[in-house]
Amino acid sequence: MLHDRVLVRQDGGDGERRSTAGIVIPATASMGRRLSWATAVGVGPNVRSIVVGDRVLFDPDDRSEVELHGRGYVLLRERDVHAVAATRVESDGTGLYL
Image (cartoon, rainbow, N blue to C red; front, side):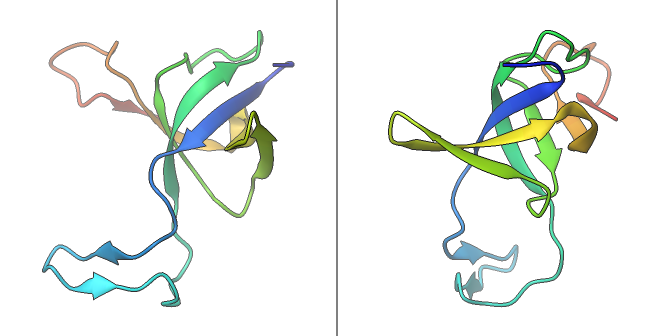
């Protein structure tokens, strides 16, 4: 990894999903702009707030896809990450920081 880049693996696919009420929403349904969660699998030497294993929130429109060993990943800059969910945050905190 170079500079401020983060390599992430998306959690789940773009397939059908369920709403909180239990309604199935097909993959072909049109949705507004929505952020996605992913898990960091590699970080560059200049990344300060993300470590491998953290979950990050990012805009799926601002991404570069890459395939390694037959598996798809997303390459992001650290500044393109909107939020980080980390277990290393204090136990009385929310686990999210911006």
